Length: 124
Image 1 (tube, rainbow, N blue to C red):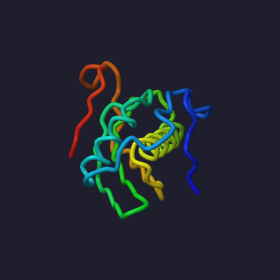
Image 2: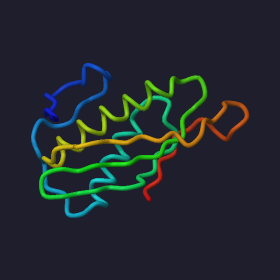
Image 3: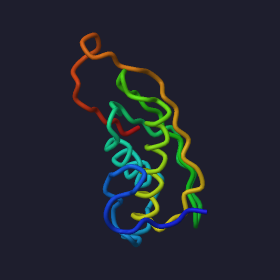
Image 4: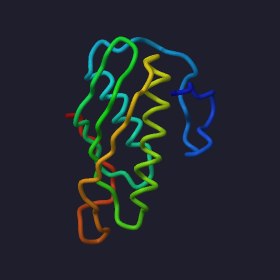
């Protein structure tokens, strides 16, 4: 069961939770993917976010996301925080129940070895 967040910050993440009610229904999976990518990119330690799959029906959505993170951040903590933030944001902005958010970490970037420390977000 997914509950709607209240206005303010999400207690487990400290990030802004978004609105308390649905702003609009998504037109297609691309809208849901965009919302999920934007939410996941807010999580500290996330460098790149790619939506792998969005399964959408009339009342719920399931998401698969692929991430690249920075070395020095806890991968399990990042994955759990991304799940929570994406679930809250997608539910708040679409009114859909989020059945599952699967997070796959594809790579770790090492500061000083890999390119710049700025975050990059990819759609698709």
